[in-house]
Length: 295
Ligand SMILES: Nc1ncnc2c1ncn2[C@@H]1O[C@H](COP(=O)(O)OP(=O)(O)OP(=O)(O)O)[C@@H](O)[C@H]1O
Ligand SMILES: [Mg+2]
Image 1 (tube, rainbow, N blue to C red):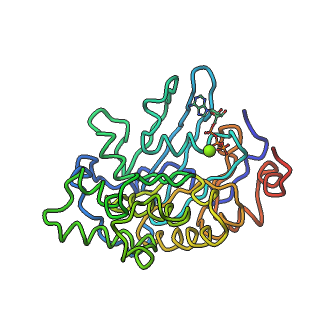
Image 2 (cartoon, rainbow, N blue to C red; image 1 turned 90 degrees about the vertical axis):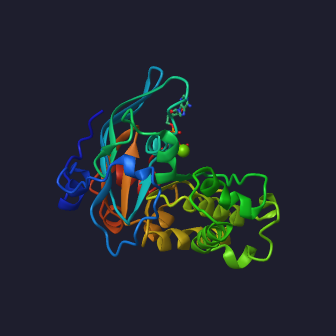
């Protein structure tokens, strides 16, 4: 499907253009080392590039020619009506759809120039580089400590127990949960509130040092107080991480996202800086969606 509104401003074209020149040459093989990423002082261009991505469930095409640059150390908000392909898109970014029956994809996704679907890439290691937080909090039914320690143990990210303790503490601090749980790390994670469980899931994802964190409506199942905490956390995270967050909540996108992409029926309709998209959308479809007139 083609949309009539093709006029894009400079920012939009920059975001949509697949920029080979800025891609770094870090190999995915290096990702296997799982060294903590050095703290980055500023945004450094696209960390992930999606090119001509098409996705299908059997005969149904759900993503159509999606091309997008995801900028490093920024938050990209993904918006669009129910069923437009938001979840499918982010699941493709860490190969979570590989084993879904009937799923098929064409086009490429690269991290710093490396194709994440290349034969030599181990999807398990990729998932540590590109973490995922789901809509409903899904902590394991084990202790708070063991939830966060789970990934570091599997991937052998520490030598001594002391180092593991440090990883657990750092991750909980980054997720804004440490103060609330530091005296009960042995408690079963299912005893936490929904908002705390969601921050625990974020801590669990952070514990393996991802470069990119994918979040699929991370606050939609939470009460307003917990939602604010998760939003504040996303804003904090963008200093050190690249975040891709699916949300139906426009105020939330305006609060947390640097850039926003608007998807409609599997196609990118518009992408740009968050305030521009909300205040001055170039597409009639985006405008209708923002006004609540697009189903
Ligand atoms: N596992 C699956 N098997 C078959 N079809 C699927 C599967 N998952 C999603 N779909 C279909 O793909 C399309 C896009 O779904 P997707 O979940 O990506 O949309 P979404 O934008 O995340 O929607 P929502 O806002 O409701 O979460 C829908 O038509 C959906 O029915
Ligand atoms: Mg979804």
